[in-house]
Structures are given as C-alpha cells and as structure tokens.
Image (cartoon, rainbow, N blue to C red):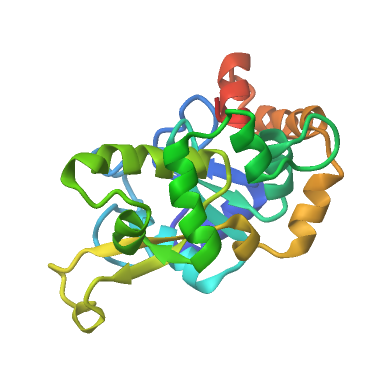
Length: 239
C-alpha cells in the first residue's frame, strides 16, 4: 500500500507509467481511489489536504520540482498521467513515429494534416520562447478572447497527447502572492525536448512504432492481466 510520496515515486518508477487519478481506465493507476471516494481504512493518503507527503494532488508538481525522470501531462484518454523516463522513448516512438525508425517532426505531421492549426499556434510560441505559463501562452498564441478558451484548451490537450508539450511546473500571475491560498497557479508547459535529455529521443528514434507498442503492451499486461485490447491500443497511441 502506498503510504507516502516516496512510495508513490518507487511504485511509479517500477510500473513505468500510470494514470494520475484513482480511475485506472481499465489499464493501471498507482492508487485506486479518487478524491471523492472513501479513503481505505488505515491509509494516510488523502486528496487535496495540501500535505506534500500524503496528498496525491501535491505529488504531481512535487515530482516535477524534485526529479527529472518522470513526466506528467494529459497523456492518456485526454486525462492526466505519468510516464517514467525509462518508458518515455517507447511512447514517443508509438505516437511520434515516422512510419519506420525515427521520429516525425512537428512540421511533418502538421503538413500531413495530423495536427490542427490551433495546436500549431500554441506549439510555435513554446518552441520559440521555451517553458511558458498558460496565462501567458494563451494570449501569445492568439486565444485571448473569452470565446477562444475552449479552442485553446483543446489545443493544449492535443499537444500533450501527441507528446509535443509536457507540464514542467507551475507559476503565479503575481509571484509575490504565491503563498496566498486564494491565488491560483498557472500550469507551465515546455516541449519534451526541453524536459528530457537527448538520449531519450535518440533511443526513441531506434524504435518502430510496432516495436514500441509491443513493449508497452507487455508491461500493461504485467500490471493488469485483465486489460482489454482496445483499451490498450488507445492508451498506447492516444487515439
């Protein structure tokens, strides 16, 4: 049973990937209850307490602040999840593969009609400026109007699912107010190339999409022997 942040990290590194919430989506989650579910008897883990040792909501940013071997983003079923560094190349190859060995570039996929124009506008800002908080990214990408928010949010999800953007921290609109519990933090996004080292992408480039999918499938079946084939395929490819 996971009883602390350390247990979470150890479990995640061992599993390689996980949904971020208590719903495993038929695949796998390191914890099996959500914020609105009863806490199992004897467990110190509880959502939204603000305790960095026992609150899974806090872990998502703590792991980004303290480590460089775990990615967090909307990675699976358009929901938040984690991928450890050891498994990131396999998901890259599955989702950004060029059809053989090697990764397709953003431009290649956009020109092939596989990425939306809205996503391109967002990606171009981050690619040019580096890690960018969403409250800055939205107007910079041309989504400042209230009615543009839904399109902006869809673009963020698209880019995270395609593994062209990943969460790399949080920022406050007013840094001097960051200890004010009423001041909401803004998610900071960067490209995976700026999050992981070059070796991660070099390894991904040696794999075909099929090879990567087979490797991930075997691990999923190890974690959850009851996982269904259609769910596995959607989990791996993000389709």
